[in-house]
Length: 64
Image 1 (tube, rainbow, N blue to C red):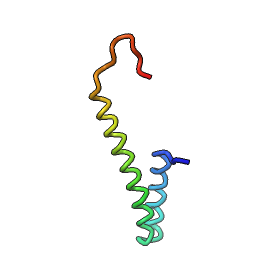
Image 2: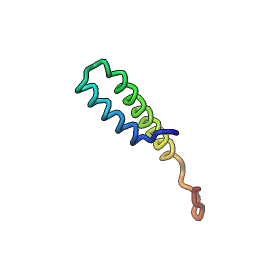
Image 3: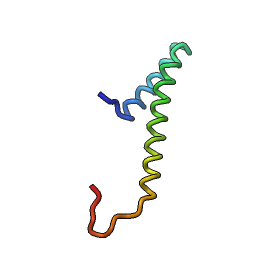
Image 4: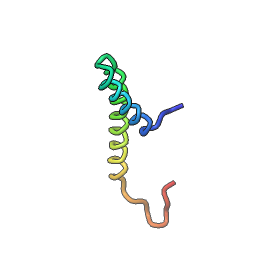
């Protein structure tokens, strides 16, 4: 099962709370969630940038 970006963002928030309340020994947990969120956001932005550079489809054609 693959987690969604929203689920990773929630995990990152919870991990930040754990670090805040329980100490830096839990920072690697936060770091892992944070890196995953950033990687997915970067990937989404890169994909969006590539798609925005594509020419519009000819009239009458609908992208699938």
